Length: 461
Image (cartoon, rainbow, N blue to C red):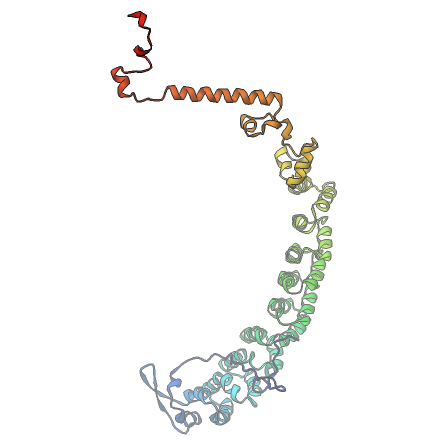
Protein backbone atom coordinates (compact mmCIF):
# COMPACT_ATOMS: atom_id res chain seq x y z
CA UNK A 1 0.00 0.00 0.00
CA UNK A 2 1.29 3.44 -0.90
CA UNK A 3 2.80 5.63 1.79
CA UNK A 4 0.48 8.46 0.69
CA UNK A 5 -2.62 6.37 1.38
CA UNK A 6 -5.39 8.38 3.06
CA UNK A 7 -8.38 6.64 4.65
CA UNK A 8 -11.59 8.43 3.55
CA UNK A 9 -15.23 8.22 4.50
CA UNK A 10 -17.03 6.63 1.51
CA UNK A 11 -20.06 8.83 2.10
CA UNK A 12 -18.35 12.21 2.30
CA UNK A 13 -14.98 11.59 0.75
CA UNK A 14 -13.28 13.42 3.63
CA UNK A 15 -10.17 11.97 5.35
CA UNK A 16 -10.82 9.90 8.44
CA UNK A 17 -9.00 11.00 11.57
CA UNK A 18 -6.91 8.05 12.82
CA UNK A 19 -5.31 8.15 16.29
CA UNK A 20 -3.55 11.34 17.24
CA UNK A 21 -2.26 12.06 13.77
CA UNK A 22 -3.04 15.42 12.34
CA UNK A 23 -6.08 15.30 10.13
CA UNK A 24 -5.19 15.76 6.52
CA UNK A 25 -7.54 17.91 4.50
CA UNK A 26 -8.42 17.28 0.91
CA UNK A 27 -9.60 19.73 -1.66
CA UNK A 28 -12.58 18.75 -3.75
CA UNK A 29 -11.57 18.09 -7.30
CA UNK A 30 -15.04 18.89 -8.65
CA UNK A 31 -15.32 21.56 -11.29
CA UNK A 32 -18.57 23.49 -11.53
CA UNK A 33 -19.77 25.48 -14.47
CA UNK A 34 -20.51 29.15 -13.90
CA UNK A 35 -23.78 30.85 -14.67
CA UNK A 36 -26.30 33.47 -13.54
CA UNK A 37 -27.44 31.17 -10.72
CA UNK A 38 -24.28 32.19 -8.86
CA UNK A 39 -25.78 35.66 -8.40
CA UNK A 40 -28.84 34.45 -6.48
CA UNK A 41 -29.25 35.52 -2.89
CA UNK A 42 -28.82 32.55 -0.56
CA UNK A 43 -32.20 33.13 1.09
CA UNK A 44 -33.85 32.76 -2.34
CA UNK A 45 -32.15 29.48 -3.33
CA UNK A 46 -34.22 26.96 -1.30
CA UNK A 47 -37.65 28.54 -2.06
CA UNK A 48 -36.78 28.79 -5.75
CA UNK A 49 -35.49 25.18 -5.92
CA UNK A 50 -38.65 23.87 -4.19
CA UNK A 51 -40.88 25.80 -6.55
CA UNK A 52 -42.36 27.94 -3.77
CA UNK A 53 -41.54 31.02 -5.82
CA UNK A 54 -41.70 31.16 -9.56
CA UNK A 55 -38.65 33.36 -10.14
CA UNK A 56 -35.93 35.30 -8.36
CA UNK A 57 -33.68 38.14 -9.36
CA UNK A 58 -29.98 37.55 -9.91
CA UNK A 59 -27.23 40.10 -10.46
CA UNK A 60 -24.33 38.51 -12.28
CA UNK A 61 -21.57 40.01 -14.46
CA UNK A 62 -23.19 43.44 -14.34
CA UNK A 63 -26.50 42.11 -15.60
CA UNK A 64 -29.93 41.43 -14.10
CA UNK A 65 -31.61 38.06 -14.62
CA UNK A 66 -34.91 36.49 -13.64
CA UNK A 67 -34.16 32.85 -12.77
CA UNK A 68 -36.54 29.87 -12.48
CA UNK A 69 -36.64 26.60 -10.51
CA UNK A 70 -33.99 24.96 -12.68
CA UNK A 71 -31.50 27.67 -11.75
CA UNK A 72 -32.46 27.36 -8.11
CA UNK A 73 -31.62 23.64 -8.19
CA UNK A 74 -28.24 24.44 -9.77
CA UNK A 75 -27.58 26.99 -7.02
CA UNK A 76 -28.04 24.38 -4.24
CA UNK A 77 -24.29 23.69 -4.44
CA UNK A 78 -23.62 27.17 -3.04
CA UNK A 79 -25.14 26.27 0.33
CA UNK A 80 -22.55 25.11 2.84
CA UNK A 81 -22.47 24.30 6.53
CA UNK A 82 -25.84 24.08 8.32
CA UNK A 83 -27.75 25.03 5.17
CA UNK A 84 -26.30 22.01 3.35
CA UNK A 85 -28.73 19.65 5.13
CA UNK A 86 -31.72 21.39 3.61
CA UNK A 87 -29.94 21.55 0.27
CA UNK A 88 -29.40 17.78 0.45
CA UNK A 89 -33.13 17.13 0.96
CA UNK A 90 -34.15 19.44 -1.87
CA UNK A 91 -31.58 17.88 -4.21
CA UNK A 92 -32.86 14.33 -3.51
CA UNK A 93 -36.38 15.40 -4.35
CA UNK A 94 -35.14 17.15 -7.48
CA UNK A 95 -33.42 13.95 -8.64
CA UNK A 96 -36.86 12.30 -8.54
CA UNK A 97 -38.63 15.12 -10.42
CA UNK A 98 -40.70 14.31 -13.49
CA UNK A 99 -39.17 17.30 -15.29
CA UNK A 100 -35.99 16.19 -17.14
CA UNK A 101 -34.55 19.71 -16.94
CA UNK A 102 -34.77 19.67 -13.14
CA UNK A 103 -33.19 16.21 -12.97
CA UNK A 104 -30.32 17.42 -15.15
CA UNK A 105 -29.84 20.50 -12.94
CA UNK A 106 -29.81 18.28 -9.85
CA UNK A 107 -27.17 16.01 -11.41
CA UNK A 108 -25.01 19.04 -12.23
CA UNK A 109 -25.16 20.17 -8.59
CA UNK A 110 -24.70 16.66 -7.16
CA UNK A 111 -20.83 16.51 -6.99
CA UNK A 112 -20.58 19.68 -4.87
CA UNK A 113 -23.56 18.95 -2.63
CA UNK A 114 -22.31 15.37 -2.03
CA UNK A 115 -19.14 16.74 -0.48
CA UNK A 116 -21.27 18.18 2.32
CA UNK A 117 -23.70 15.23 2.57
CA UNK A 118 -23.85 12.27 0.19
CA UNK A 119 -26.52 9.94 1.62
CA UNK A 120 -28.53 8.17 -1.12
CA UNK A 121 -27.16 10.45 -3.82
CA UNK A 122 -25.07 7.85 -5.61
CA UNK A 123 -27.93 5.38 -5.50
CA UNK A 124 -29.96 7.88 -7.50
CA UNK A 125 -26.96 8.54 -9.72
CA UNK A 126 -26.86 4.84 -10.60
CA UNK A 127 -30.58 4.90 -11.41
CA UNK A 128 -30.39 8.02 -13.58
CA UNK A 129 -27.57 6.54 -15.64
CA UNK A 130 -30.27 4.34 -17.19
CA UNK A 131 -32.82 7.18 -17.51
CA UNK A 132 -35.07 6.97 -20.52
CA UNK A 133 -34.13 10.54 -21.41
CA UNK A 134 -30.70 10.43 -23.05
CA UNK A 135 -29.76 13.97 -21.92
CA UNK A 136 -30.43 12.95 -18.28
CA UNK A 137 -28.33 9.81 -18.73
CA UNK A 138 -25.49 11.87 -20.20
CA UNK A 139 -25.65 14.35 -17.30
CA UNK A 140 -25.46 11.43 -14.84
CA UNK A 141 -22.45 10.05 -16.71
CA UNK A 142 -20.65 13.40 -16.44
CA UNK A 143 -21.48 13.62 -12.74
CA UNK A 144 -19.91 10.18 -12.29
CA UNK A 145 -16.67 11.31 -13.96
CA UNK A 146 -16.47 14.36 -11.68
CA UNK A 147 -17.35 12.53 -8.45
CA UNK A 148 -15.15 9.43 -8.86
CA UNK A 149 -11.84 10.95 -7.61
CA UNK A 150 -13.58 12.15 -4.42
CA UNK A 151 -15.88 9.18 -3.76
CA UNK A 152 -14.03 6.06 -4.97
CA UNK A 153 -15.91 3.61 -2.72
CA UNK A 154 -19.33 5.04 -3.58
CA UNK A 155 -18.82 4.71 -7.32
CA UNK A 156 -16.72 1.53 -7.46
CA UNK A 157 -19.62 -0.78 -8.34
CA UNK A 158 -21.04 1.78 -10.76
CA UNK A 159 -17.70 2.03 -12.55
CA UNK A 160 -17.47 -1.73 -13.03
CA UNK A 161 -20.61 -1.62 -15.19
CA UNK A 162 -20.00 1.72 -16.88
CA UNK A 163 -16.48 0.81 -18.03
CA UNK A 164 -18.02 -1.99 -20.08
CA UNK A 165 -21.13 -0.11 -21.20
CA UNK A 166 -22.27 -0.46 -24.80
CA UNK A 167 -23.21 3.24 -24.87
CA UNK A 168 -20.20 5.21 -26.09
CA UNK A 169 -20.58 8.38 -24.00
CA UNK A 170 -21.16 6.37 -20.82
CA UNK A 171 -18.08 4.24 -21.43
CA UNK A 172 -15.93 7.29 -22.26
CA UNK A 173 -16.98 9.14 -19.09
CA UNK A 174 -16.35 6.02 -17.01
CA UNK A 175 -12.79 5.74 -18.34
CA UNK A 176 -12.35 9.45 -17.70
CA UNK A 177 -13.46 8.82 -14.11
CA UNK A 178 -10.99 5.94 -13.76
CA UNK A 179 -8.22 8.11 -15.16
CA UNK A 180 -8.92 10.83 -12.59
CA UNK A 181 -9.14 8.22 -9.86
CA UNK A 182 -5.58 7.05 -10.62
CA UNK A 183 -4.23 10.36 -9.30
CA UNK A 184 -5.90 10.11 -5.89
CA UNK A 185 -6.62 6.40 -5.33
CA UNK A 186 -4.23 4.23 -7.40
CA UNK A 187 -5.02 1.19 -5.25
CA UNK A 188 -8.67 1.31 -6.35
CA UNK A 189 -7.62 1.70 -9.97
CA UNK A 190 -5.37 -1.36 -9.65
CA UNK A 191 -8.39 -3.44 -8.69
CA UNK A 192 -10.26 -2.25 -11.76
CA UNK A 193 -7.26 -2.92 -14.02
CA UNK A 194 -6.96 -6.39 -12.52
CA UNK A 195 -10.49 -7.28 -13.56
CA UNK A 196 -10.19 -5.55 -16.93
CA UNK A 197 -7.07 -7.53 -17.85
CA UNK A 198 -9.22 -10.68 -17.66
CA UNK A 199 -11.66 -9.44 -20.32
CA UNK A 200 -11.77 -11.35 -23.58
CA UNK A 201 -12.18 -8.19 -25.65
CA UNK A 202 -8.71 -6.78 -26.31
CA UNK A 203 -9.90 -3.14 -26.36
CA UNK A 204 -10.54 -3.27 -22.60
CA UNK A 205 -7.12 -4.74 -21.92
CA UNK A 206 -5.45 -2.08 -24.08
CA UNK A 207 -7.22 0.75 -22.22
CA UNK A 208 -6.35 -0.84 -18.90
CA UNK A 209 -2.69 -1.18 -19.89
CA UNK A 210 -2.53 2.53 -20.71
CA UNK A 211 -3.26 3.29 -17.04
CA UNK A 212 -0.28 1.26 -15.81
CA UNK A 213 2.15 4.17 -16.13
CA UNK A 214 0.03 6.31 -13.78
CA UNK A 215 -0.55 3.72 -11.08
CA UNK A 216 3.08 2.59 -11.20
CA UNK A 217 4.18 5.59 -9.12
CA UNK A 218 1.99 4.89 -6.09
CA UNK A 219 0.47 1.49 -6.74
CA UNK A 220 3.31 -0.45 -5.11
CA UNK A 221 3.67 -4.20 -5.56
CA UNK A 222 0.12 -4.53 -6.90
CA UNK A 223 1.05 -2.36 -9.87
CA UNK A 224 4.18 -4.47 -10.46
CA UNK A 225 2.02 -7.59 -10.70
CA UNK A 226 -0.22 -5.87 -13.24
CA UNK A 227 2.80 -4.99 -15.40
CA UNK A 228 3.97 -8.58 -15.20
CA UNK A 229 0.61 -9.92 -16.31
CA UNK A 230 0.39 -7.39 -19.13
CA UNK A 231 3.81 -8.50 -20.39
CA UNK A 232 2.39 -12.01 -20.74
CA UNK A 233 -0.74 -10.90 -22.59
CA UNK A 234 -1.46 -12.55 -25.92
CA UNK A 235 -1.99 -9.14 -27.59
CA UNK A 236 1.13 -7.50 -29.00
CA UNK A 237 -0.32 -4.04 -28.34
CA UNK A 238 -0.91 -4.78 -24.66
CA UNK A 239 2.64 -6.07 -24.25
CA UNK A 240 4.05 -3.02 -26.04
CA UNK A 241 2.21 -0.62 -23.75
CA UNK A 242 3.31 -2.55 -20.68
CA UNK A 243 6.93 -2.70 -21.86
CA UNK A 244 7.05 1.08 -22.25
CA UNK A 245 6.64 1.38 -18.48
CA UNK A 246 9.87 -0.57 -17.83
CA UNK A 247 12.30 2.39 -18.26
CA UNK A 248 10.30 4.34 -15.66
CA UNK A 249 10.19 1.33 -13.37
CA UNK A 250 13.97 0.90 -13.72
CA UNK A 251 14.52 4.31 -12.13
CA UNK A 252 12.34 3.42 -9.13
CA UNK A 253 12.70 -0.33 -8.68
CA UNK A 254 15.75 -1.55 -10.64
CA UNK A 255 15.59 -5.12 -9.34
CA UNK A 256 11.96 -5.57 -10.37
CA UNK A 257 12.60 -3.90 -13.72
CA UNK A 258 15.56 -6.21 -14.34
CA UNK A 259 13.35 -9.28 -13.88
CA UNK A 260 10.73 -7.92 -16.27
CA UNK A 261 13.37 -6.83 -18.82
CA UNK A 262 14.88 -10.32 -18.79
CA UNK A 263 11.54 -11.69 -19.93
CA UNK A 264 10.73 -8.88 -22.37
CA UNK A 265 14.09 -9.04 -24.17
CA UNK A 266 13.17 -12.45 -25.60
CA UNK A 267 9.65 -11.37 -26.63
CA UNK A 268 8.60 -12.10 -30.20
CA UNK A 269 7.67 -8.46 -30.77
CA UNK A 270 10.68 -6.21 -31.59
CA UNK A 271 9.12 -3.10 -29.97
CA UNK A 272 8.84 -4.96 -26.68
CA UNK A 273 12.49 -6.01 -26.91
CA UNK A 274 13.64 -2.45 -27.58
CA UNK A 275 11.73 -1.22 -24.54
CA UNK A 276 13.50 -3.85 -22.47
CA UNK A 277 16.88 -2.59 -23.72
CA UNK A 278 15.96 0.97 -22.77
CA UNK A 279 15.10 -0.25 -19.29
CA UNK A 280 18.48 -1.97 -18.95
CA UNK A 281 20.21 1.28 -19.97
CA UNK A 282 18.70 2.94 -16.90
CA UNK A 283 19.87 0.20 -14.54
CA UNK A 284 23.11 0.55 -12.60
CA UNK A 285 26.07 -0.85 -14.55
CA UNK A 286 27.23 -2.80 -11.48
CA UNK A 287 24.07 -4.89 -11.54
CA UNK A 288 25.27 -8.43 -12.31
CA UNK A 289 21.94 -9.65 -13.64
CA UNK A 290 21.74 -6.71 -16.03
CA UNK A 291 25.19 -7.62 -17.37
CA UNK A 292 24.04 -11.19 -18.00
CA UNK A 293 21.01 -9.92 -19.92
CA UNK A 294 23.17 -7.67 -22.10
CA UNK A 295 25.71 -10.42 -22.79
CA UNK A 296 22.96 -12.81 -23.86
CA UNK A 297 21.43 -10.05 -26.00
CA UNK A 298 24.67 -9.61 -27.94
CA UNK A 299 23.99 -13.02 -29.52
CA UNK A 300 20.32 -12.35 -30.28
CA UNK A 301 18.98 -13.03 -33.75
CA UNK A 302 17.37 -9.59 -33.82
CA UNK A 303 19.83 -7.05 -35.26
CA UNK A 304 18.38 -4.14 -33.24
CA UNK A 305 18.74 -6.03 -29.98
CA UNK A 306 22.31 -7.06 -30.82
CA UNK A 307 23.22 -3.51 -31.76
CA UNK A 308 21.74 -2.05 -28.56
CA UNK A 309 23.43 -4.67 -26.36
CA UNK A 310 26.84 -4.32 -28.05
CA UNK A 311 26.70 -0.54 -27.62
CA UNK A 312 26.11 -1.12 -23.90
CA UNK A 313 29.21 -3.29 -23.44
CA UNK A 314 31.70 -0.41 -22.85
CA UNK A 315 29.50 0.84 -20.00
CA UNK A 316 29.21 -2.53 -18.29
CA UNK A 317 32.62 -4.20 -18.75
CA UNK A 318 36.18 -3.29 -17.90
CA UNK A 319 38.71 -2.76 -20.72
CA UNK A 320 40.31 -6.18 -20.47
CA UNK A 321 37.00 -8.07 -20.27
CA UNK A 322 35.55 -5.89 -23.03
CA UNK A 323 38.43 -6.75 -25.35
CA UNK A 324 38.06 -10.48 -24.77
CA UNK A 325 34.27 -10.35 -25.20
CA UNK A 326 34.55 -8.33 -28.41
CA UNK A 327 37.03 -10.83 -29.86
CA UNK A 328 34.59 -13.67 -29.19
CA UNK A 329 31.69 -11.79 -30.78
CA UNK A 330 33.73 -11.00 -33.89
CA UNK A 331 33.89 -14.69 -34.70
CA UNK A 332 30.12 -14.93 -35.23
CA UNK A 333 29.05 -11.37 -36.12
CA UNK A 334 27.94 -10.75 -39.72
CA UNK A 335 26.75 -7.14 -39.71
CA UNK A 336 29.40 -4.75 -41.10
CA UNK A 337 28.62 -1.88 -38.72
CA UNK A 338 28.73 -4.09 -35.66
CA UNK A 339 31.98 -5.66 -36.87
CA UNK A 340 33.48 -2.18 -37.12
CA UNK A 341 32.30 -1.34 -33.59
CA UNK A 342 33.70 -4.58 -32.19
CA UNK A 343 37.08 -4.01 -33.86
CA UNK A 344 37.28 -0.62 -32.20
CA UNK A 345 36.68 -2.32 -28.86
CA UNK A 346 39.40 -4.87 -29.54
CA UNK A 347 41.97 -2.25 -30.59
CA UNK A 348 44.33 -1.39 -27.70
CA UNK A 349 45.77 2.08 -28.16
CA UNK A 350 48.31 1.57 -25.40
CA UNK A 351 49.88 -1.38 -27.18
CA UNK A 352 48.93 -1.05 -30.84
CA UNK A 353 48.64 2.71 -31.29
CA UNK A 354 51.14 5.13 -32.77
CA UNK A 355 54.12 6.38 -30.80
CA UNK A 356 52.27 9.58 -29.90
CA UNK A 357 49.24 7.57 -28.72
CA UNK A 358 51.41 5.28 -26.63
CA UNK A 359 53.18 8.21 -25.00
CA UNK A 360 49.87 9.41 -23.63
CA UNK A 361 49.77 6.44 -21.31
CA UNK A 362 53.33 6.97 -19.97
CA UNK A 363 53.38 8.29 -16.45
CA UNK A 364 56.04 10.75 -15.27
CA UNK A 365 58.57 9.31 -12.78
CA UNK A 366 58.64 10.55 -9.25
CA UNK A 367 61.26 13.25 -8.49
CA UNK A 368 64.48 12.06 -6.73
CA UNK A 369 65.17 13.88 -3.46
CA UNK A 370 68.11 16.29 -3.61
CA UNK A 371 70.02 14.46 -0.89
CA UNK A 372 69.79 11.14 -2.76
CA UNK A 373 70.84 12.88 -5.97
CA UNK A 374 74.00 14.35 -4.35
CA UNK A 375 74.98 11.00 -2.81
CA UNK A 376 74.54 9.21 -6.13
CA UNK A 377 76.53 11.81 -8.04
CA UNK A 378 79.37 11.65 -5.48
CA UNK A 379 79.58 7.93 -6.26
CA UNK A 380 79.66 8.59 -10.00
CA UNK A 381 76.11 7.40 -10.65
CA UNK A 382 73.84 9.22 -13.06
CA UNK A 383 70.28 10.20 -12.02
CA UNK A 384 67.83 10.42 -14.88
CA UNK A 385 68.96 11.93 -18.17
CA UNK A 386 70.92 14.82 -16.66
CA UNK A 387 74.76 14.38 -16.93
CA UNK A 388 76.94 14.09 -13.82
CA UNK A 389 78.51 17.21 -12.45
CA UNK A 390 81.98 15.66 -13.02
CA UNK A 391 81.18 15.04 -16.67
CA UNK A 392 80.21 18.59 -17.33
CA UNK A 393 82.83 20.90 -18.89
CA UNK A 394 83.49 23.68 -16.38
CA UNK A 395 82.62 27.14 -17.54
CA UNK A 396 84.60 30.30 -16.86
CA UNK A 397 82.16 31.31 -14.18
CA UNK A 398 82.56 27.96 -12.42
CA UNK A 399 86.41 28.30 -12.47
CA UNK A 400 86.43 31.90 -11.20
CA UNK A 401 84.15 31.09 -8.30
CA UNK A 402 86.03 27.90 -7.35
CA UNK A 403 88.73 28.25 -4.58
CA UNK A 404 92.39 28.01 -5.72
CA UNK A 405 93.23 24.97 -3.65
CA UNK A 406 90.48 22.99 -5.38
CA UNK A 407 91.57 23.85 -8.90
CA UNK A 408 93.28 21.36 -11.11
CA UNK A 409 96.38 22.31 -13.13
CA UNK A 410 94.29 22.78 -16.26
CA UNK A 411 91.76 24.91 -14.43
CA UNK A 412 94.56 26.98 -12.81
CA UNK A 413 96.03 27.78 -16.25
CA UNK A 414 92.56 28.65 -17.52
CA UNK A 415 92.05 30.94 -14.56
CA UNK A 416 95.39 32.76 -15.20
CA UNK A 417 94.54 33.22 -18.86
CA UNK A 418 91.16 34.50 -17.87
CA UNK A 419 92.73 37.03 -15.43
CA UNK A 420 95.21 38.29 -18.09
CA UNK A 421 92.39 38.78 -20.53
CA UNK A 422 90.49 40.76 -17.95
CA UNK A 423 93.57 42.99 -17.25
CA UNK A 424 94.12 43.68 -20.97
CA UNK A 425 90.49 44.49 -21.33
CA UNK A 426 90.62 47.02 -18.50
CA UNK A 427 93.82 48.68 -19.92
CA UNK A 428 92.18 49.01 -23.30
CA UNK A 429 89.19 50.59 -21.70
CA UNK A 430 91.53 52.99 -19.78
CA UNK A 431 93.35 54.09 -22.96
CA UNK A 432 90.18 54.80 -24.76
CA UNK A 433 88.85 56.80 -21.84
CA UNK A 434 88.98 60.72 -22.07
CA UNK A 435 91.63 62.47 -19.91
CA UNK A 436 91.52 66.18 -19.04
CA UNK A 437 94.87 68.08 -19.58
CA UNK A 438 96.32 70.41 -16.92
CA UNK A 439 97.24 74.07 -17.53
CA UNK A 440 101.00 73.30 -17.31
CA UNK A 441 100.66 70.68 -19.97
CA UNK A 442 98.75 73.05 -22.17
CA UNK A 443 101.46 75.82 -21.91
CA UNK A 444 104.38 73.40 -22.04
CA UNK A 445 105.46 73.64 -18.48
CA UNK A 446 106.26 70.08 -17.87
CA UNK A 447 108.80 69.58 -15.08
CA UNK A 448 109.40 66.03 -16.15
CA UNK A 449 110.53 67.16 -19.63
CA UNK A 450 112.42 70.50 -18.94
CA UNK A 451 116.19 70.24 -18.15
CA UNK A 452 117.39 70.74 -14.64
CA UNK A 453 119.94 73.58 -14.88
CA UNK A 454 120.89 73.39 -11.27
CA UNK A 455 122.25 69.86 -11.68
CA UNK A 456 124.55 70.53 -14.64
CA UNK A 457 128.42 70.76 -14.32
CA UNK A 458 130.07 74.13 -14.18
CA UNK A 459 132.54 72.94 -16.82
CA UNK A 460 129.86 73.20 -19.48
CA UNK A 461 129.85 77.02 -19.25
